[in-house]
Length: 210
Image 1 (cartoon, rainbow, N blue to C red):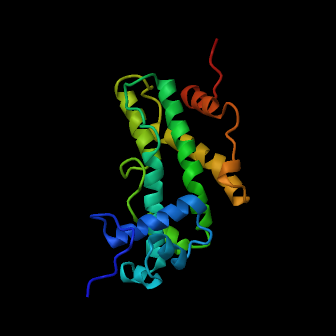
Image 2 (image 1 turned 120 degrees about the horizontal axis):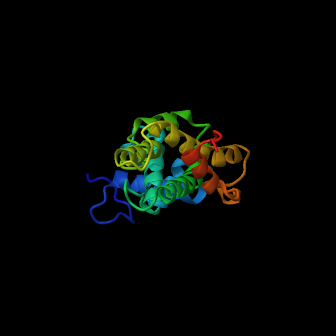
Image 3 (image 1 turned 60 degrees about the vertical axis):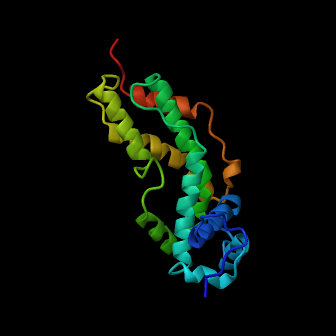
């Protein structure tokens, strides 16, 4: 007997991928609240029990849905600059703007999963969905090392520390609000946030001799 086929299954799309895509759409629209097996099955236009024919449990499906959601968000963001292109300050602004947009879009789903640690553990076991599997911090550190190699960043600079500062600032901008129950749509980027962060990253805090 052939497996059930979803009414909305695209040509060439596997049923597991269809189910993951359905769950990812619900995450994007509503976050993790109310993300039940029944809701996913209705979105996918399949019977409730079909999900368990293709995944070990709901946690596996939700982890893969979160992974798909993050990748979908990233696809809509502008491409990140490469070493040697544009100017250094402008490129760092692009990385900060990218990080802020990414975190604003994906953090509600992660905040909604705090009560489901097994899902977060399953997600962490998957490949990083950002920057071709490297993650944003590693991508930025690689960019800065490339700029070091061509002399646009000081050889004394520390790309990993700078990348951690930038990505950590993006987390700090978004996460405290979400944990306080503020929806992502209500989070405002403070005036000057991007420019101040880039300036501090480029010039540091030390007093320069006259």
